[in-house]
Image 1: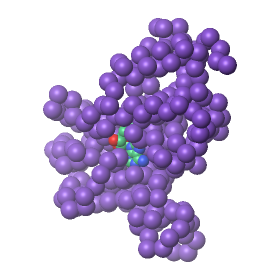
Image 2 (image 1 turned 30 degrees about the vertical axis):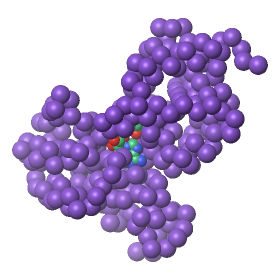
Image 3 (image 1 turned 90 degrees about the vertical axis):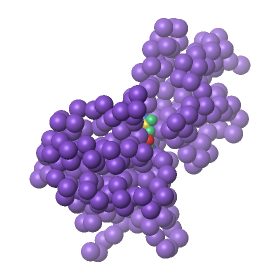
Image 4 (image 1 turned 135 degrees about the vertical axis):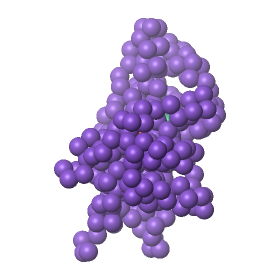
Length: 266
Ligand SMILES: C[S@@+](CC[C@H](N)C(=O)[O-])C[C@H]1O[C@@H](n2cnc3c(N)ncnc32)[C@H](O)[C@@H]1O
């Protein structure tokens, strides 16, 4: 029997590999009555839910929201007011390009109790599994997370800041704008030789990494047929990948396996 007062668990599910879930995320996943989840939450993570849990898919395709954000906010409140323990499961971390702030603002306004569980954000997960350290004593003393999503048809970003040396810039939601991003960086002084990589379906068995420079990566991607989700990493640290690469996905291997192979020899 449900208590009269429900609660919402705003949980980050990480970028894809289910083993990147936190223990707290897993515990709350097991005790929820209903799960409200996005497109970026993969099937392997959904399989960890209890079979009896009610599941509500609220979508969020790159150009199409299955349910508008306001309706999602309202849905969470309504379910909690029915006395349910609501698992709001999001890809990555709920507070990094996840609109988690808006969701809990609505909960707070409605007097609904909630908890926030951070998740491994795509930048951390994809970089780690691609063998690209986001900071490095020799190459990057800062790391910037930025959206590559067009706003009113334009990439209205602080390009002089993003073009600064000795930092790594990670573009979320930038798959469709890779060419524009690289062009803008070059216009603002980034050298044509600056390394850049696109990590596709990072941390999963389907992970692919396309590496190049800001000058040639857009063209390399044209014939690659890349699909979302994809994350663009720009910075000197990308050149460390050939030495530090350790994760071999099925997409990059001829051998069947569990996707994780540690290379012990050079
Ligand atoms: C709406 S944002 C959500 C970010 C999420 N809250 C996080 O912390 O990772 C979606 C973007 O995250 C990036 N992303 C998420 N998961 C990814 C993955 N497994 N591989 C590559 N990029 C990913 C992509 O840039 C995608 O367009």
